[in-house]
Image 1 (cartoon, rainbow, N blue to C red):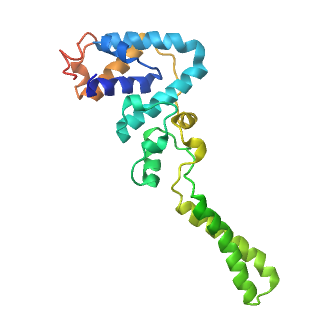
Image 2 (cartoon, rainbow, N blue to C red; image 1 turned 45 degrees about the vertical axis):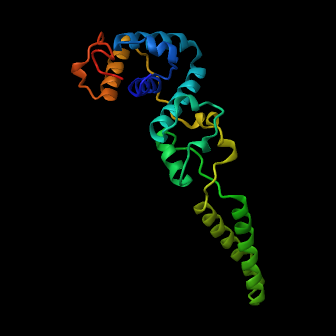
Image 3 (spheres, rainbow, N blue to C red; image 1 turned 90 degrees about the vertical axis):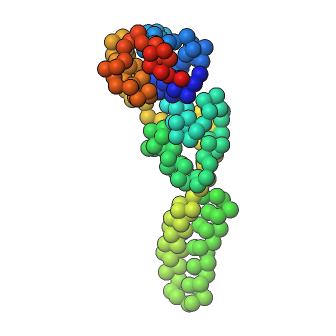
Length: 222
């Protein structure tokens, strides 16, 4: 499939929370056929709503990685390591990921233990020792150590640049992806949405798209 075809498939999967096999995608040549396919897939998954929502979350995740991180569709699997897609500044990439996959509640990055442990335990102990050497009242040691511990924790948070171990795989990220509440789709609703997606992906005015237009021959999709 060409780039336009892949983008259309990804956008459709993300919108309806379904999976479109490559073999099936190659047989779909018009918006009307795509709408019929989506309708059939939604009908087949209606009974398994919980499983369908998990799939929908993964497809939205995959679409975000392909569109915003340049991932290849076949590289994005539930057991894939998210770190392979976060190149460059991990902190910036993590924030970008939250937006790309619509996961505002995604946990924050962690500070490396080689930094956080010395920081969170070393600062309070060092501070308490200095105060002790300065012969300040003993009752001030505990409050001072507590303040220093909080300050160290804040600093550690600022230095966080490590993906939490429990979130290393894409499958672990899926529960954090927001899935729009699925409404009862009619065939006409599906067709209109498919035509709108086609318009957005190909840059063609909606009024210039007919359900029977051929994606390649009539709409110029690669």
